[in-house]
Length: 169
Image (cartoon, rainbow, N blue to C red; front, side, top):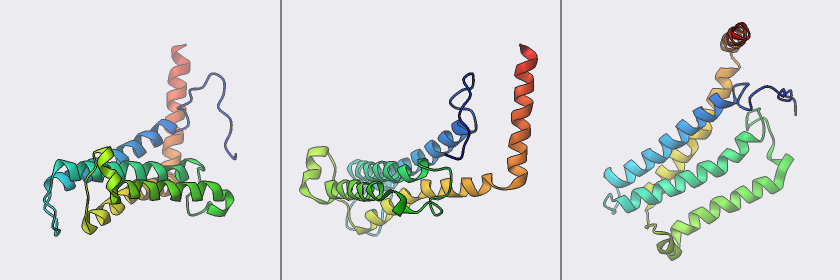
């Protein structure tokens, strides 16, 4: 809890929270849509013919796994690599179990109950790769945010906006 509390008259989305939410939403959505597109329209070196069912299954896994991995990004403003998993072992173990359950939903015949289809090895690799993209983007965003010139520019922009709001009152 290194960050200051939000002031009473301040928005919940102040302090760049909205920017972070939008950035993560865009990357998660892009990964899910890319997974659907690849599964539904792109011929891969596999025995499966592209179909909407394969695209839907891939997008289901990507959406689920990126959401689960997102848990580790929102628990701290620090990099996931600087926050040890041992600080919260129950969170790490439950996230792994949830990811396993998502995978088993597709790997086992129970997938038919959820309208999912079987996918092969290349599709699994694509799903894993696309599921990692939002996490990588989050880490790159944090790295970029630490560049002094960018941080100073955001600070000046906030001051300018605050002054404009104050002058309108």
